Length: 471
Image (cartoon, rainbow, N blue to C red; front, top):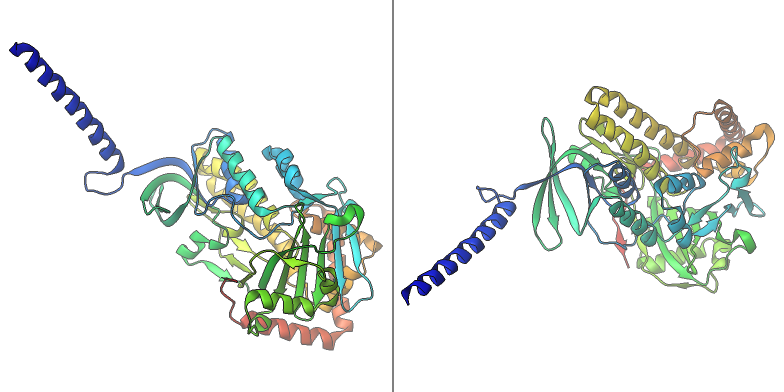
């Protein structure tokens, strides 16, 4: 009678010991012997799950890399920058998301320019660009667009973690140690061979390294919201973006496929600081200063919060290091005027993925690959920047409102507007040089007005920016 009891006790003890072992293993996985969080490991850690981060994560995961992507928010989440460029289209094809983007997109075939200093609007079509192969693109809700790219990266094999904010990055001889905090307060630490900073305007690494520089050539602030019932262009060009110049800056008018229209004002900091009302009322008051836009919105209704943000233009002094890259807005942002943000982000991610693989597999070639990456990134930014920093000048406004095919200048400018800024085409660059010559000649012939505008812009760049607020 005693034997079964002893055997039963032994079984209980064995089960207890097994449970204890399992608990110990779980504890060891979570903590080291000093009570600190154990480091998780990956090959490449991507900070940020926007277009740049999702693109580079998907490309590297497709190639068999061990990739972790951390996103501080949860998709879908609101983001501005709904207008894409035609040169985004081949990137969607290469990435494998073209059909998904088409389903959420509003077709955009060109742009409309409206100026209170000119009698009638000007319309331009991407089909007339230097390379007519890419004659259209889309307007998209960024919440939908960004989520498509993020989920695609996960399907390609990237480990995606939402609601997880990076709090610090430390680099040692071989790796990077990334500390994070989840939205529930849990902290984690990752050791990665390489870090791709795609943190957008948070500019995580640039801030941590102290290398972010505000642009001396452009200091603007923006105010934006979504409207329903806005009057759109007729027929095929319904989805075209419209740019309205007015005394204090310019407006964007971006139609979306669900009936909403994104309206934003980009103005000087002096004007934005004159605000004495809430953002929503200030946006409506600003729209009233631009009669052509006010007419298009006469029967429209504001259907979103209105957000104000400043310090638009910045650039880090470098975008590469021994085991990191800054991609997209994490490195630089210039201005939303030519809708360049998503294209620059995705293009830098494509080049960045190749660069990261070189750094991981062929360390002796790493520095050369990083120099190539930085040169390509700066070249695209530089081409856009020349036009963006002059968008409010009478000379550039006059040339855009009066396009000419002389010297093939119009196809050259349309190529820039389409995002074709990464190819080294001597003939195209020659036409852009002719366009710039015409711009400077116009300035010389209108010297007094040009000097007054220049002084006003220089004063604007010295003014402090505006913090982001929401109504």
